[in-house]
Length: 180
Image: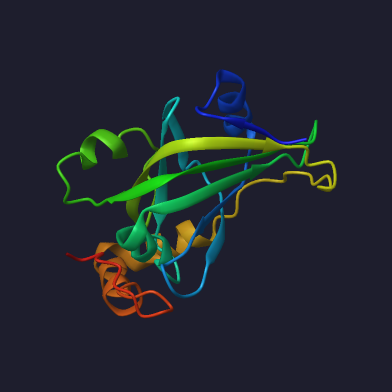
């Protein structure tokens, strides 16, 4: 059975902190929905209604484009070990870039990560748990290093060139505003 919350309780925060993977969903006003799995040490609960997600360079930048248009975002966590549970966080998000005045405050909450592109601040409007009894068990074996290795090999200039060439628009042609 599902249950709605108006905030992230301490029990929900403990569940979030125990998960190794989460999923981010955004959508433009008109166009394709983006749903992406995320990992690494890239999620922080700041308080009962605010979270941060550190985003690294990747093949697209859909979240930035969608949030600049309508701010809607859903984050989902699933338990693949122990007791079954699914948690969805519904909220409004905004992008924080390295040139923004509060960048140093938020980046200091995360480990140094090659290819860091932006941080998303999400104000949680509601949270929902559901049973997750159909979710299979999976064993966590560790983090993949390929993306960090790739970003390190690119260097700062290579990453910035990648942003210029690959991360300026969404798959639906919306601007990401990454380099503004």
